[in-house]
Amino acid sequence: MTDPLPLPEGYAVGHLTDLEARTGCTVVIAPEGTRGAVEVRGGGTGSRELESLSPLANSEGPSAVLLTGGSAFGLAAADGVVRWLEERGRGRPTPLGVIPLVPTAVVFDLAEGDFDRRPGPDEGYAACEAAAGGVPERGRIGAGTGTAVGKMLGRERATPGGVGYASTRLAGGETLAAIAVANASGDVVEDGEVLGGPRGDSGELLRSAELMRDMRELPDWGIRPGQSTTLVCVCTDAALDKRGCGIVARVASGGLARAVDPAFTPLDGDIVFCLASGERPTAPPGPALSWSLTVLGTTAATLTAAAIRDAVRQAR
View 1 (cartoon, one colour):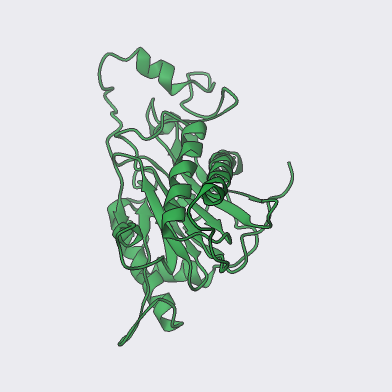
View 2: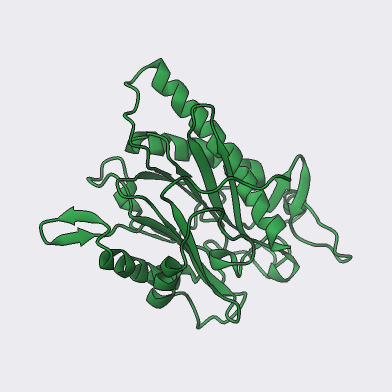
């Protein structure tokens, strides 16, 4: 397997990992002037400031995106990211100073380690301090430290999840990359095979969809809404406006459904971000723009699926 390409120019990814508490956070710091959007598909999301990425919001994009463990408690880690950015004068300009915008999404990892220790402002700040360009670290790190996939038979029989990454360069020179945190209730699959799922009595990988078919009622251990999710952040140096980012994020979510079975359930908080930093003007509305968005979205979907699968492979 060939090594992935580095992040697009100007992007940086940093992790804070608490191995003892089995939690952490992962920050994606964007270049100045980046546009952004989000696609929310899961029924059990935990988030902060996603409204700033709405097509109707005044802001064009975020200063950073934070993916964090700790469920709703972990949203506090965004305060540390905001502080780090403000200290460096990075954020949306106002007459009184810059205001960093940091959309945040969480995974539920509280059952993995110490329930009372979750990422907070200091952890968010430390992740920013560790941020760098190039190829991000992957595996059981950052927001993926305490994750698992294939929880249909309970977490103790699930497969470890983690942080994954995939990237490519288009014929026009644009670079696309996807960072994924895999913590799905369902399985991670590829070409009909289960890469990560529930394990049988002999350690063999089983298929959640088949187990669900034979269950007449909620199992005693009961997966609950909000305790599983897959988070993805697509980064590109392509010239997209906010609407274009929204279209690419929507198409990219199809890659999540290719790699996770089942996806977008009431049990999961699946979210896909798209960030674009290109300075070149976008094409006017018409066939050329539609084609460009289709190519970018299709590529982003392929990378999204690859990054989710990479998360499970790297976790091994």
